[in-house]
Length: 253
Image (tube, rainbow, N blue to C red; front, side, top):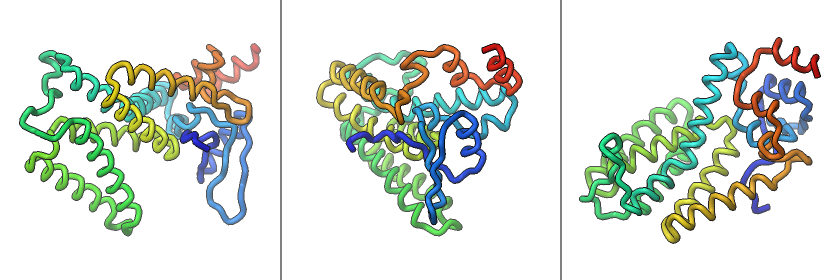
C-alpha cells in the first residue's frame, strides 16, 4: 500500500485495450465505469502511447525517444540542478544561464518546492474549471504568477524555467498514475539532496531503482525487459518495429 507506482494500467481507449490483449495481457471491465483495467503492466507499458503505432516506424521511434526524454526530465531535471547548485559546480559558459540569480534570497530548495506545489494547485484548479475556461485560466495564471514571483524576488528565472520544463515532461507522460508517482519520487529526491547532498541522492536513487526492480505486476517484473534482461524485448521497447518485421521474428522463433 506504500507503493506509489501503478501495477495496472487504466484506459478508456478501445485501441489501447486491443493492443494489450494482442500482447497477451488481460482486461477487466467494471460495470458503470468508463475505465478498463489492464494487467500485467510494466513501467514501459505506462510510458507507451497509441500515437506511436499510428505513425511510420521511424516517426514512431522518434516520438518514443522524445517521450522517454520528457519523462526522464520530469523526474531528474530539478533534483540534479539542485545538486549542482548546492555544491557550487561550475556549469561552464554553455550552461552559465542556469546559474541561479544571487540577488534572490530565498533558498533554491524552497523555490523549487514552492514552484512544484504551485503547479499542482494550477492543475487541480483547471480540473474543476469549466472546459471553456480551463486552458485559458491555466496559461494566464501560470504566466502571471510566474512573472510576478520573479519581479517580487521570490523565484529566480532559472527556477521557473526548469520547473516548467519538468512540468511539461510530466504532462508528456501517457499515464497519469505514473506521472504522479514520478512527482512523489522527485520530491523525495529533492528532500534527500537538501539534507544529505551527493551521498543522499546516490542512496535514494539506488533504493528507488531496487524498489522498482523488486515490484511485480501479476508475476511480471515491473522493469521487464531490463530486469529480468531480455534483449529482444528491450529492442521492441526502445524502437518501433513494423508489424511485418515482428511477424517474421515470431515465425522464426
